[in-house]
Length: 485
Length: 117
Image (cartoon, rainbow over all chains, first blue to last red; front, side, top):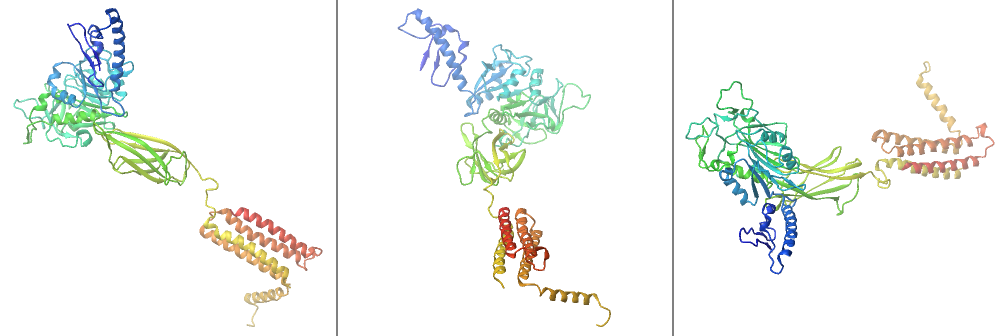
């Protein structure tokens, strides 16, 4: 255990390294005076040299240690998350959400959105695995962060939660538009619902709505049904129905519309009905996951704790469904659930064990792959009955559903088709909420060798018989002809 | 019937004259004729079989039919050469003709075996 402590009594900044835990890599933010190597035998001059060497050494080790604790293939759950707020009061007004994330093991790094020291990357490596943008009013981020930097961040597979609000800036709207989510263009429009607003003591203009139109998915929202409606107050967005990567997790009801509550409607609103999405998720092709919410208050303590009653229904719930909804979604977006990996692709002829380099037409072969699902702490076998393997050359010649032994092994056996060429074993698995699996393994297939055909063709037996019988007839004839009188 | 000669009477008369003329041929020629009829019969069987099941191993079909046709042709050649009534081959010894016949049949059956597959 290496202890680096301040020698002077004024501000003893102790930085302790104990194996792999509780390491703060903001070493560079601390003043160098407080980190001095404690030594009793060296005199002060040698102390200064030792100090500079030690600082460089510790800085490099800290960077390496910080990087090893990031998202890795073996442990896909995110670890370090950057939270950008435009008002530090959000830390306390949304404290239930943040403490629940920290209790699940995430390291949250809170920064103001215009903090000039914000950096997502250093030396080409990403410093965080996830980004939470709770800064709807920010026009410009501090530091080197802009729309391009955020898109680069998600293109490398990292996750994102973005919460907008009635005062959402163009920056947030642009980020959302790049990811496939289109907020209402009218900057003063909010979602109003006169049919399913949340009943409250004050009259209200029906902008606080109680939504319960959830997407039907156990992976996204957990296996327990969310009973109470979710309180929402903010702007709505629409998603392109042709986009298969974006899903509407919480849609508005049929009577909702997006308009300015303070002014009269001059024309029918552009967004209305259940095509308004209140919370959407996107799973990109590189398996980065995003959550876009039109309401920052959805995550707040006030909404978590408040009772809810939907207008027109007599059910009163003592607690809204916000906390359960937000917790389950955060489990999904930070890869604690629904993350699959496929390993150990094997194929061989029936009866053999090693993988041949080439197959022959009409061979019988077996293909197997192991698929595991991340449970948040360990890899569990994935159980499903719809994983298919294709034997593909320009089009699938064989498409077979694989059977599983419930321990994660999926296997299928089939006959190689009567076509030769270079084929691929392809597994393309895309299911709602799960990471997409796309495996391809190339294998050539050759025709018969000249000695692999059947020796005697049964259909030709009469011809064989005829030829031999003419030979026999010739012999008999020559004897009869020569020795008859 | 004693009326004008009908076709049926003509055919019967023709048939009788053929039979009586044929019975005058020498025995060795009759043996050759039997051999030819056998070969043609085998060829017909093969053609009917191919018409029924299709010509899948076509080379085998050709080989079988060729063996029959070849033996028939060679037998007919032998018959021509040993027929004493044939003025053209008067000076050819029948043993010579038979030896040619045997050699040609050997070549024929070699080809057949090769092409049979």
